Image (cartoon, rainbow, N blue to C red; front, side):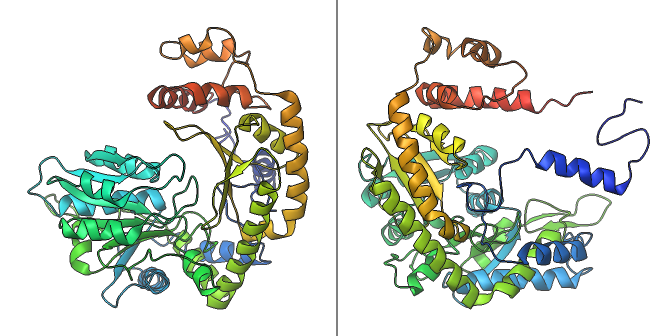
Length: 473
């Protein structure tokens, strides 16, 4: 037998296995320390990782498939749902489910809306174009047609009247964001929910990103507009606890205003010789580990702790926004949540992202979409608070370096290859190595992707990911 890493011919001692794991993890971006502005959420709270690991270990082998067999898991899940409903102004009738993440929550929200309308043979979902791509994924998986409403390219905001006009007889769900992930802006939820309600359609607020911070920011005096269950017409909401509740991945909560709205979310099947399958979420078997870890972390931090973390995050967000505004040539997006995003007509943002990465700051470049120009996204967490001055100095230095380097140039003729060339051919034209390895500087690759139409970009990145996910045997 080949000595495969995960299945060696002879078992490997514990210490050696852990050393190998540590060596692999050393190649990852840093999950702690406030230098990664996407993907991870770090509160910089001492002892939290150890608590979460211990709680996860205690319930890792508990199976959420049958809550009657493991009442501890049922109790913890109900606690998490109740906490989310309280934070998001849910009425006493609010019910919910714990899912593996925001994408699963959104898929289930779309499923519930679709299955509640069996009379509609060609269901449709209406949402602003700035809504999270996971909603498009849900629509694709569930064969629900997608109607995206443009936003003003200057303000990045959707016109509620345009959303209302997009609602038709086959619309089963209207979705909006609090806030949008890309730019951190809160959609006009009251107006959108009112339009949906007037048409007899459900309205889902995707608060996966901001649902756990916006209420605390409001309590701190920030002018957060209405967005939660206090808004009439909002029928469901999603909030990711593994974001600003700072619990380990992956734990999200999907809430419905009442049980009747949640009922179509369930799947039940008894027409076979085995046990009757009844699932509130997509998975059947679910490890209790993530739920127990989330429960333990939330119990430890508490309401007062989350309010303090929200204050630190607010201060860090203000500091980063001020740092961006102080640099000539950068155009900051107005701050409404815990996102700092900026554009530029004077600096190549992809070169700037490389310069920041060279200084240890890992940002998220975002590509153009129609008339919306490219931007750089910073997800701000409490851990960033102590690093604002350091980032501000490095941002000035990185912008100066990016100006000196100028925009990247694409090889002649490469844009003509976008619609037909393979990823390997494009990599060769860009001078990249074979085997799917990424270069240290990504500006040229990102510039090419930015120039590609969305469908071509999707194809290129799907092909690239497919190259990465080929195990050696």
